[in-house]
Image 1 (tube, rainbow, N blue to C red):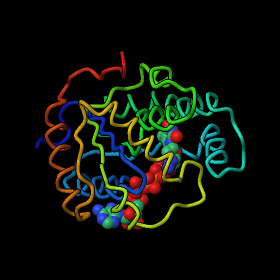
Image 2 (cartoon, helix red, strand yellow):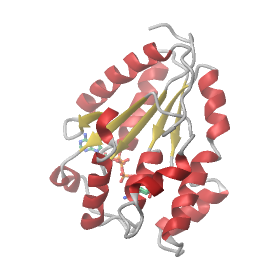
Image 3 (cartoon, rainbow, N blue to C red):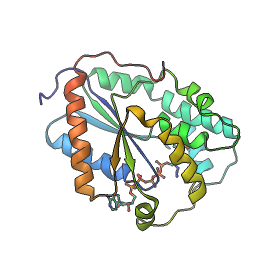
Length: 210
Ligand code: Z5A
């Protein structure tokens, strides 16, 4: 694969709780860097910005925020990264993103009264991914990776609804069985990512859900 030709690819890793998104994002970053690709890792929510600090406080259950307001904050947390993301992609940097708008929609629409279509609206127009990889893991495999922590949303019933919401969006994604070994899952992801990086070339960056 040629290094440094064309724009970078926008690669999203989504998945169920403890499916290994963070582990796989880091492995992917290391692997691509070791082959001299220009690549960066982004994680949403980005808890370091002003919106991110409010989100962090909400997730740690230190702050109550209206369901729709927190949905908009998660979305704003992505919009504030948009220009930087576009600039990186145009400069040939591939972006690996740990959770994106799909998590926003899947989690918020698991709440009473929030329709999936309504939840998509604030993220319409964000940079459109070139590849979405969904790490699918059975609840028993996930359970063997440790119990739930103290954060909001970390309970079985809510996570089941979230899983169903992801399924409503996953038609065009690469859905991977993330129950295998860390290395096997990594190899599968790497193959998809390499072929996507080769295919983006100078294709214009799309807009999500437009
Ligand atoms: N949220 C939202 O509501 N709206 C939004 O717009 C966005 C997010 C973007 C915080 O997310 C919450 O925010 C999240 C969604 C909501 N709520 N929940 N639940 P976060 O990204 O900050 O944190 P997280 O998503 O909860 O992390 P995670 O799902 O728990 O973990 P993960 O990244 O998928 O997994 P991991 O940390 O890589 O691995 C978990 C453990 O499994 C670890 O011990 C690994 O060593 C082990 N592991 C990983 N892979 C394997 C394999 N293949 N075999 C065995 N063991 C493994």
